Length: 213
Image (cartoon, rainbow, N blue to C red; front, side):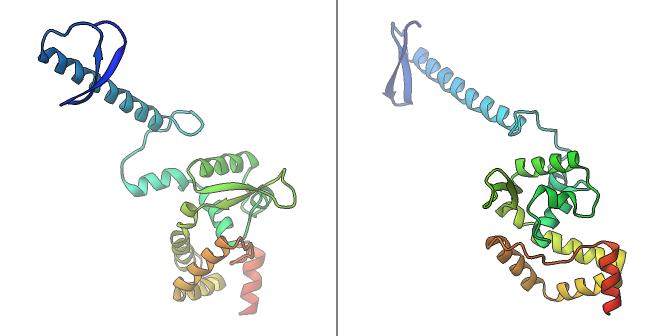
């Protein structure tokens, strides 16, 4: 078989007929099948490469298992990622500086890494600051705000089983009004309302809440 391929129609679909003489229909069919197999293999290789490489072109880490919980924890199950999501969702944080001074003591290099990781996984995105286009604000995506029920459950569980005190009272009220809380979180996200839904969780704030009881 020599020459350039020429796509023709047959009962087998579209197939490339090469210039030259084909001895019989079996050779023609074999040629057609080999051509299709080659095209399919190319597609498979392209998908495989896309799955192996992340958005930065670096090899993706091998997943521990196919369990949805395990896969989710690989994205935001470290010490810091959920705190960043918390600050975006209920504390109204938008800037790198706000995350840095959140009171959790996160180092700037770790903060940069987690922000990049969350953005790469489509949990957060960046948008230019309205007053200064050189600066960026961080914002949850639709995929990110969908974690609101998960974060609410963690807040309630943590206050109820590990802390108690005045914060537990606040979380109990949230527990009784889950639907309203989740609706308000989504409204603030949709309207870009950065008003904090919850206070800081440092010792001074907890002490003040205790005195007000």
